[in-house]
Amino acid sequence: MKLWKCQVCGYIAEGDSAPETCPKCGVNKEKFTQVSEEDAAKIYRSDKTNDLHVQLIHLAMKMDAVAKAGIEDNLDPGCVHVFEAAKAHAWEIKQMAKAELAGHIAKGKY
Image (cartoon, rainbow, N blue to C red; front, side, top):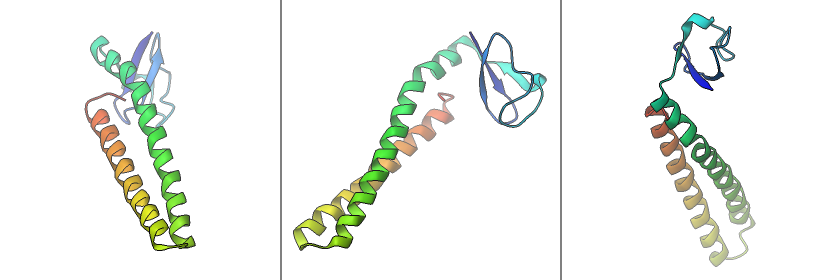
């Protein structure tokens, strides 16, 4: 199976030939170029890890929501301290994972 990259929007298609039109931006087949075997290997190799980063971001968003609820509940200072720390760590993890994804995209690993 070959990979094809839309030179207009960056969409990556998989198939024996480029799609007739880009599913994302609608340009015709002539705007696609075949991805080299080396670059295709990077894309396939990073696909799983990128999905894991997305899952981590989703979990951090859930953690943030739980932490906010705990802060609002305000049972006692000890609880609030834990929830505030959790909220801060959720933000940090989310930003780290987003930065890693941005790095992957910049290196063609998407």
